[in-house]
Amino acid sequence: MLNIQGTGNSAAALEYNGNLSYAKSTKKGKGSFDFNTGDNLVMKGYMTDRAGSVISDTIYDTPTESTLYTFGFLKQNRIVILMYHKITDDAPLNEYERTSVEFENDLIYLRDHNYQILSMDDLPLLRSGELKLISDGVIITFDDGYESNFTRAFPLLTTYNMPATFFLTTEWMESADYMTWSQVWQMSGFPGPEGQNMFKMGSHSSSHPFLEKSAPDFATRADYLNFLNTELGDSKNWITDITGQTSIFLSLPFGDGANNQDIINTAVENGYLGIRTSIWNSFTVEKMNLFVLPSIPVLSDSSIDIIENYLNY
Image: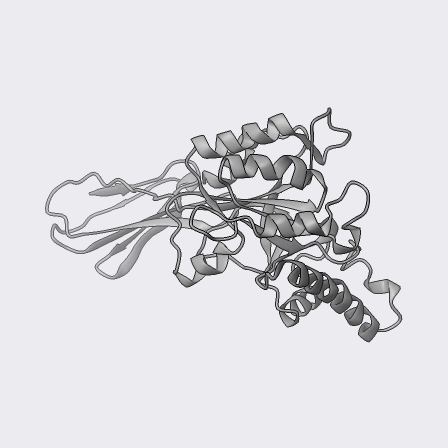
């Protein structure tokens, strides 16, 4: 006699000699049936994670006596992209400012938890198999191009030897409270421990408009597509001209336009490697979509251990 059941969100399915004998949610009860020792059993258990993905484990056996089967669900390594904005030495004036002390504590937390600190440029390498994800991964990014990214974040990142990507609103550079192009150039050329550039520049568009919500403002679709091409193309060209970097990602202003095919197509046509969105989530290498990359904002009152909620499932 064989009895199978699960716990919580788990469910079980049993195939006996090639026939599906039991497939029933444990919330509805359990099942049993007679079998002959030595016959083939295939037992499959599964559970769903927070994103609705199915994690499963399968046991194959030809039992000759009563056996207790234990399913094991192996956690896959995941990647979370952190989104910062302005770093301040003073009390934050809004939710998008984080103090230097909190930012340094964040870096210490990431170091002490032995995450694999990645660059945005590592994502295509992970997908191709040229780079392996050996633990949960974390990518540090900044939006807008505030001067504090250079004066406060840059020194701390170099102290803790952690790479980062800075998404620049290129028309804002050289204006009050934002980086100069000289500072951008200096960071982009800073060498890492193996001689690689530690800091990458990305595009946050040219003028920081709503990329999707602006569509009704244009008389024709052609005018709208030209607007997208200008915002993405001009920004990327500025960054390439100043830094020499050609592997560039886009961050959506206001998080507007995730999954929008016009924006994705325009990014591809302008040579972007991918798009970082403001969708709150983490992801695995296997299910990574370079043009719909989720992220987690780190705000003035955020606790950095919030990332555990997105990594540990």
